[in-house]
Image (tube, rainbow, N blue to C red; front, side, top):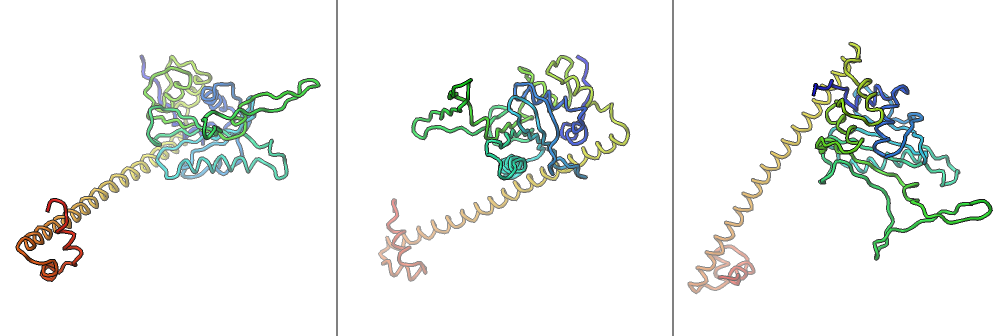
Length: 313
């Protein structure tokens, strides 16, 4: 099989290419594969995360999509480990909800938010490469889920219909661990994750719009100025990764050195205590009283007595 051409990194594309309405089809294809339904992007939401920055550090796009639920979606690429990352995800979804709910309007108009994180580091331990999280109410004792019902009018009558109300209201989270993906293609989503991992689209891929990603994200489509900015971005990403790895390595080394020093100190103290105990035992066997031993060794009476009473002495 011929080697596929290299594509632009997805985080760069989100900030520089996918913001263009003409390129919404790429995100639509990716989200359709992830959410397993037809997605149409209506617009990018006007948030701080969507603003262009010189460093391009925050690779996040907030979009409004059209589907059966009229949901909002946050897509975010995270290259390096960040403390309290899940807390920030919660803050992001909460902020979208607050920003798009007008004061005084009914709570039933609160927007539905889906958070999609594309991670290039391991967030916790697990045996999968895509994780899903949502709010579920379960019985404290039975562990069974709460079945929620919604009143609907059918002609002249009202009926109660059982629905998955939690998924209609509460935020949902998708965590995609790119580096855990083992290149085994089983579903359309796997083709997109392969692209995220390798920056390539294989000729046999057939997921919706992924062929357009191959065309529009090709490095060959860049002009000289775009390529210069892109190369500068890659250098910044590599530099940040080196800084993080160096800090991690140095932190481990410092921790090891501190651990060895602490272990040595504990060993010295334990050895000193054992030597004192042996000396106390010898003096006691020679007929010295507890008070005499304490006076000779400068140890407290309680310590001497405890040493004599130790099991095995």
